[in-house]
Amino acid sequence: MTKSIFLPALLATTCLAGIAFASPEITRIELGQAGIARYTFIAPTEGNTLSFDVPMRDSDDVLASLVVRDPAGGVIDLQTDTPGSSLAALADTIFSGGVPRTTEGLVRAMIGETLEVTTERGAFTGRVMGVSETPMVEDGNDVIRTSVLMLTKDGVQEIVLTPGAQVTFSEAVAQQLARAMDADRRDTTSRRFDLTLEASGVRDVELSYVTEVAAWKNSWRLLLDEGRFQGWATVENVSGQDWIDVALTLTTGSPVAYRREMIDPLYIARNDPPQGPRPVTVAPDTGAFARLAMKAPAPMASPMAEAAFADAIAPSGTARAGQALNSAGILRYAMPQPVDLKEGRTANLMYLDMPIEPKIRALYRPLKTGDDVLLAASLQADEALAPGLVSVQDSNGFVGDAPFTGMLAGQTRLLPFASATGAQVLTDRTQNQRVTGMISGGEQVTVNLVTLRTTRYDASVPEQAGLFSVEHPEGFGELDSAPGEVERGDGFVRVTVPVENGEVSLSIVERARSSRQMTLGSQEFEGFVLDVRAGRIAVAEPMAAAFDTAHELMRRARAVGQEIDAQEARQRDLSSEQGRLRANLDAVEQDALRNRYLKSLDETETQIADAADKLAELRAERTALGDQLIALFDPK
Image (cartoon, rainbow, N blue to C red; front, side, top):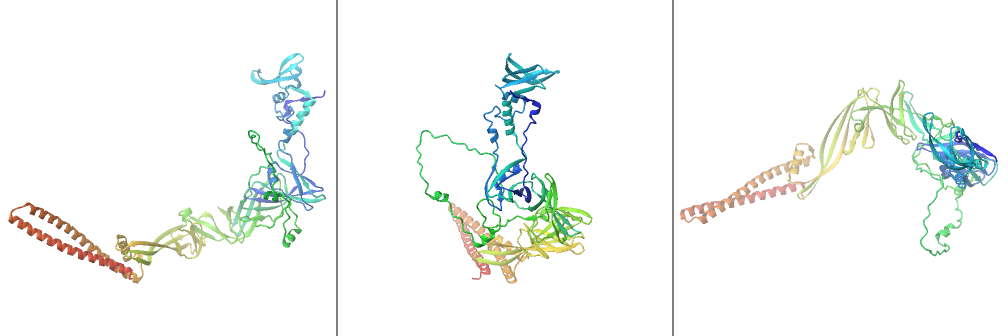
């Protein structure tokens, strides 16, 4: 009987050699900043089968996004090994759990098999009954050794597997172990796909798929002394193979991309059967789904579409795209020459170099930087630019970094790169109101106002700044006037003016419209009239005279109101005296005293009548004053 010898120290390194297949060469890459890339390969083939390897991590993406362009025909299918299928085939062997990784695991898997175990004690042959761990003392140290319980010709014996122990087993067991090792062999770096095509013959087939990669990182160089703006891309080759003469395109944007779980088998749990038998009636489907299942006629294409696709290589499958769409929101930069980059290497590539005319300015941003003044360079380009940090340099060296959020073609961006040492900005703010109209309806009046707020900026800036820009906060109202160039931003309006001898002054006027509804003669309206007469609120000349008259009317109305209050108080006092006299008159019997009370009561009643007449006169005057005030602002 042929025997195989097992040495525990060699188990972990034992493997079976496989056949290596060269992957198709990458010819084109579209590398995105969002960590998504599309690899394009050219695979020479002579028949209708094509095998290619991709990194293991790309397996799901290949199944989900592979596009095949074969100039000779279409695609029949794409196949690969099912994960776990080889291990499932070992279910009827003693190594159904996979390759043992320890001596104990190996012997435990062979319970019931015949082994020959050779240790320092000698050689023992028999059937394995069990495996356990035995504590021992070796050279004064406590150790744990594996013990094998075996049925030998001399009876049951326990053999301790000491260092250097050798296990010999039958060729049948060796074959099962080899199968397990073959099934367990996992290529952790690549997976092979087998593609079956419709046509044969010598040709090049194009393959492409979309997968997750390391995103390219953007950085910019602004060379002030040379007047150049350069874009650099940091690119890592993590494709699994070297790039040789690869056409590289860099893209921006954030396309929606989901993780794909395509390669691992998907098992759907089945429901328990219903209780008791249920009759099932099956009838042919004659509805909409049945009609959809029938082979539909091919759609008619226009002559222009036919001509457009006549010379193009058709993608895999039977569908054809009817319209080419622009990639909205995505910038694309094609590298000017092919790229060579070994796998696992990082390259920094200049993908854009354009001339610019940067103008240095002092930039004041009270909303963002408080009282600090920055030096900034203006950037304008005829093409869209991706975001990235800008390293600003001049003839003397590095002068600062500037954050750059990117821009569309034709836009302008400011790149603040350093603090303007010694710069100072003083701010002064004044405002005034002006009445633009009044709407009167009886005692209610609505006054329309315009408030003008003037903000003055006086600045001293470094001599290298030929311009001064202030990002004035918005929110008060609409812009009424401002000097120089005016641009609008998010929550601010940027005003730019030239600088002369390091000094600059500018004023920004804002206009806010409002309205106030008041009651004529009220304390609020009186305060409004006083503001107009004091010049705090401006009015047109004809209306100013009306406010002067209103002031006199309200002043007289206030005096009349005070007199009315006094007469009403005197009336109350006289009425109280009248009541006292009548009570006393009823209480006395002497004629002399009664006559005196009657005289006083008569005088009191006369005074009450005079006070009532005076009160009526005052109230009439107050009413007349109110009518005059209403007529003053509402002549109708």
